[in-house]
Image (cartoon, rainbow, N blue to C red; front, top):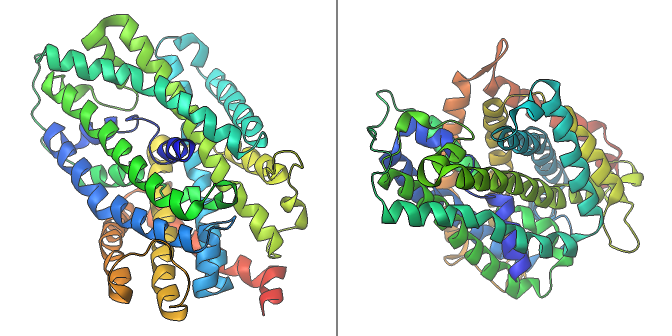
Length: 425
């Protein structure tokens, strides 16, 4: 139970890092409202869906298996395609964040090409960690969580004892980017389905998954809201908040020692999140290879740990190639692609309710088919907002929405030419 809660926490959050831009875009009060409302509309429905499907179909491959069984092989392939392409944009974020926080107290180490050179060992270390197996990753994340939380407990306590330390204005920006803030919150609350791909490694999954979802959700929400409320209470300057500025908040509240501790915790959070997400994503190529959608070599597992080592190595190489991309562009594309894959999971929940009403469901979302449909409506509404926002963001001469639609079209083509599509036929 505890290793799964810890791993889920890192897959979803990895600390309040990444919320800086949310505060900067919207101000303290609106940021807190978004952090309270978003999990109700996004995280809670997703966690309920994951709890039902993980307990009904606790198999390696998780959400890929759910969508394939509920909606057929074509949509199962698209589920994995969206998740893996989304991971390409997401997974380069964490080594980048690691380098950013290292640069806060050792800027000479991260200047220019040195930053990329330091990000590569992070990927290698996490790949090696994953090859040691799911148990090794899960148990280590318990200790990483403790190290990650320590400096933020200090921030909360100092801000509570000495309010208005900063003494600066906390008025929101004149032009608050509400949609941009919601997208950042969605990204920070994504990942609840990722633990489903390691169901074969979870003891008593029918009992463990629902409780782990609940425990991780409370942990995530608390670790976001309490630090943001603390720095708002301390009246830290609203203009200071951009990516990496939790370090500056630590310096204002507790001096150089706390700033260093926050930076080190940021590096721990980046490693923990990258390592646990690799644990999830690397299972997909292995399961797809077993279905004939990828070469059989990707289904090779370590005899001692059961880890799909070829898939882990391939994913590590691809993610390393994306390191030069920028943070915000990575984040928005990831929300678009991963969000669409989550919608497919909600539709699979409904499809399985209709097609297999007698399927054993140790945990069941209440309300029958109507209940399954209802919990998917709030995430769908948020994804519509994501489409609107991505239409205005550009990468070169193209909007991010256009790039996303191109990736969707490529997924259809790849399915049609894959040997697995002919096997399924």
